[in-house]
Length: 323
Length: 274
Image (cartoon, rainbow over all chains, first blue to last red; front, side):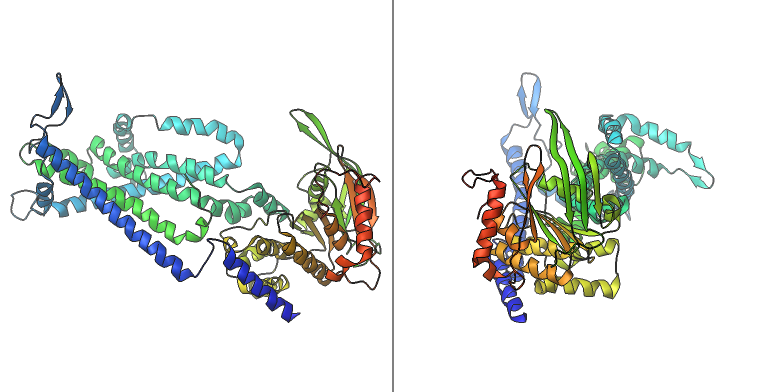
């Protein structure tokens, strides 16, 4: 008996090894994917350099007044005012914000503002995750809710953000429940969550609906209830759909937070600096670009945090969905 | 495995009809089905595609409800039997959860109800040994071959020591060599657990090799055409030698003739004669 069992396990091992692309020596696999990882970084940096080169080439070759067709300017002016040199923009980051004594270095000022915005965006993203997954749960549970809610969820995203940001702020200022007082940053977070919940709701719904019939029927034969099926089957199966949705939601939350800061005039965040430094662009053109770079880095950090989540949940991504 | 009927049948199907409403009209999937599977008995359902054998299996598993008639499992209704976890089930696809290791997949039914802690770990280890996959407990399903995945699914179906096993073409997707090995394994496992088995298959030799009785079904509407008892003799063990004995071929012929309505010349669609 034991003899045949060992024999069988030997053939099993051979079978497992013979399955193409499946679990060869784990070390070899990691090394190969490590090389690919490095290549991705190299190409990413190359992409950024290419943008810088194109920028400088255009600035050098195109006429100072830009390219005009008739009266219409189709390509921008190439003056230092409109398009500062890449190195000027970078150098400006290392100089103080103003000439006032004791002023912060520009990059530090940008980083501090970005952190404030990141915090607000994170709060908005969290609200978006809760609302988005909540809506997806309701829509998955009741087909009728899906028919009733999904059109409204889509319509909600067609409302221009700029239009209702001040409305949210003025409503918020009237909210006062006991000791709780509505803060201005909460309005911004709320608007960020408004943009963030949409991809999360759609992605979570698709993920919760993703289990195959064989799996839902298996849970049925186990006499598993709704909650057991939800936690043992639907949520784990939804992870490959949820991760890209959460990443989109994070990027949306950052955009929402920046735009809402601009339109509600909230102090301290990067949105405010965008407006403030743009106003000083005639005297200090390179400075206006600093908050833009800050906003880009902010979006990358937000999306990157989700990638970290993906690494933690890697066992749930063994059947990665494409697209 | 004994065919002796006991007081409570494992499965008793009485006068069952099943119709489906489709866009092109009503389809009679099953008509007038009467079938009894005794405790510890191995019964195969065989027939061409569309004869309703999988539908019958789904009725027994309470994944569908009969249009007319009754399905009793372990002396209770099919719904109650499902809630009581009276049966274990294995489908044509292994249906393993890809994010769980082999051991965690086998443990799934026990997480929902059943032993916990050390008792559960011990049971998982026993089951994996039974299907010969002890060394693969920490692998993930995508690291296993199809035959190994199917063995995990069978271990999972046995997790709660069910007195009834429902198997819907569990070896259908496997190559012939793996398939024969799995059949031998299944005979051994059934002998060890004493479970009654209802087994859907397309393969005549598979049905003959495994079963105490082979239920031959015919399509449109699905009904039982004939029940062929398989008597290999008291001393003949169901092992690989059986496949080469004349009694085996006699029964294969008997089932084939039953399938073809008495004339062995015509071929029924969807039935493998290998």
